[in-house]
Image (cartoon, rainbow, N blue to C red):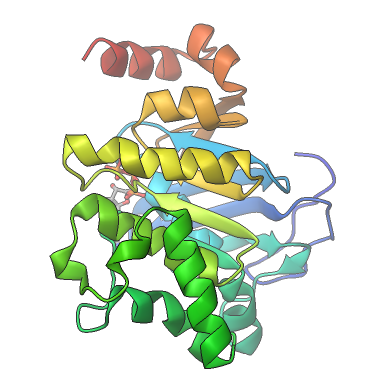
Length: 261
Ligand SMILES: Nc1ncnc2c1ncn2[C@@H]1O[C@H](COP(=O)(O)OP(=O)(O)OP(=O)(O)O)[C@@H](O)[C@H]1O
């Protein structure tokens, strides 16, 4: 990782780097478990980084630290050159720049699809109602659920709900979107419709961090694959290089298990 020096503690100033997201010396424990160990990671504007690794290796936790859904014990994180504090108003501002799409779609059950996508714009961005509605409708069209605006989440398939969740994230004009196993809760026939929306976002130049077990997506959409094991980044490489020539025994072992599954 170039240009980002390590700092002393959480929330300390991070030197400005050209990267959109920069993690430097990040450590995190859950009790005795050292779940993130000296993580250095930078993500450039427009880059699609896919994070893979065995279950329990810390991938979700890594994702969740980037917008401070989890605090860190030491190290520093910056978004677009600004240090991410542990709390306060500046945290809320920076967090609004980081979209998040979870495994479980987390839509508001008692609000319509349209209202779900308008909400963040109205409450956080303070967008005027008419403009928020126009934008929400356009985004719902873009992800292919424009005809479902007046329905409630429970009336939609899982794949449709996840596409609404993507529209909701996009409505905030995020600088980066984090996807934490976005297709893991979906029935197999719905996985592709969500991956296709994500592929399109990648082609449109959206900066994305994607935790997934979908190796086809990693191969075709990632600029870089980050392989984690036991709380560490073991190796990172372009997908063609990683999948054809993994360097570490851990990655070789992981790939042989999932590819022959
Ligand atoms: N809130 C928490 N409290 C305690 N331990 C946790 C918590 N969240 C995660 N862990 C533990 O931290 C480790 C890493 O979890 P994490 O979900 O980040 O892994 P992962 O690589 O995303 O796994 P998976 O692929 O199974 O989703 C696991 O051992 C998990 O049990």
